[in-house]
Image (spheres, rainbow, N blue to C red):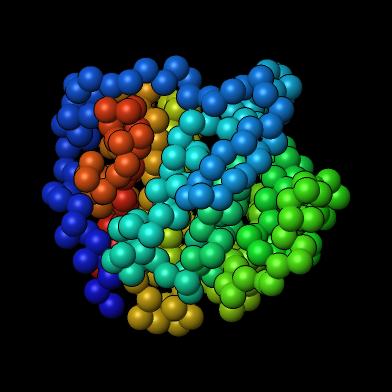
Length: 312
């Protein structure tokens, strides 16, 4: 299968020197994004992605709490809708190169309360697994329920590893109730995955017939030193599921890691990239493949990683 070589050939030279990559990214003028929240005080935020409207409920209370283990996943970050729109756009290089297709299974690390990537990709893939710590669970499910597939009936086609929230957007459901079901709609599920304490296994797929993933997504998960090693190790463990289950996925290409992030502290970025390169070969999506709002000049960057022992 030649989808990955086709994709890699469009990305330019492989990144060999983390310090050089840091210099190239941080030496250019960059828009100030502060911490990167959209509105940390709002209870809900409306966003439009590829001509579809979504409502995301968030928790300012959890964000400002002293909860052990972090609170940053309680609100929506600026990169989330930008990345979701790019990822699900018809011109996305992952789909144009056929690295992703309607049969693909994806996993997202550190999704927080936002299922935007899963919702936006729903018509284009087979399965999307959201993962994070348990505290995001209630709001995440509320956000899945509040944003049903277009032209769906009131019964959601998403599934979860926990009971669905009874609260949802009745106006959205009424709007779509009389419409026919979509021809294709991905299964969306959630699994608890703490990078420091939980073990990665094929059970994350939630499907006995699926033992690995075609792609891993992490969106704005790199923001402090303490998380770098466990995050990168979890990325490697997830991608390695593909090579560990060769019998079930014979002939399948390696799992692609897609890491999107806001450019904040340059030293944290360098440390992350150095650690990431220990496990992965790394490329950066060039500016011409990204909308202006996701380019380094806007304060964002997207990298692609392939496990060093996975081949192409």
